[in-house]
Structure formats: C-alpha cells, structure tokens
Image (cartoon, rainbow, N blue to C red; front, side, top):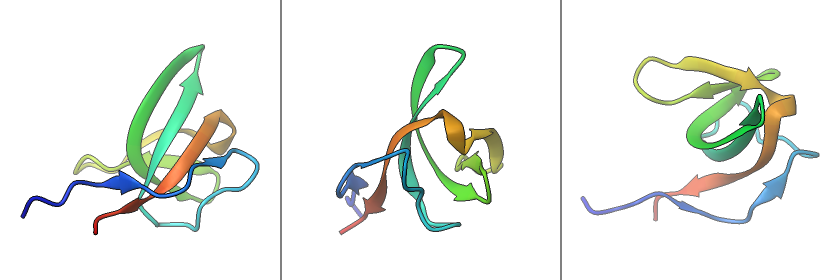
Length: 70
C-alpha cells in the first residue's frame, strides 16, 4: 500500500475540525512551530503516534487540514 496522506484544503484556527477526525495541524507552542498528525478532542489536540498524546489546546493551532488517503 503506497497511499500517503495528503492535505485537502487548509483551514485557519477560526474553525476547528470535527472531533476525532485525523488532520494535519500546524501549531505554535512557546514560539516553536510544529507540524503533526492528530485530531481534536474537545479543546485539545491529540497527537496520533500510537500513544494518543496530548499536545496542546486548540488556541495553539495556526492552521489545519483533513487527511485524504485517496
């Protein structure tokens, strides 16, 4: 299987994704920017890495997009 995740349309922080939907997030925490794959749970961003780690609150999101595996 050679499918690689790609982003559809990028969205700003003013609209958050549906809960539990996998997304690519660009976040800024303590002036450090990071791109990660995760999902939103209430007001938290959770990183998908096998351990479901809390990363930050949604107010740290710069932009995000849903993952398209097709």
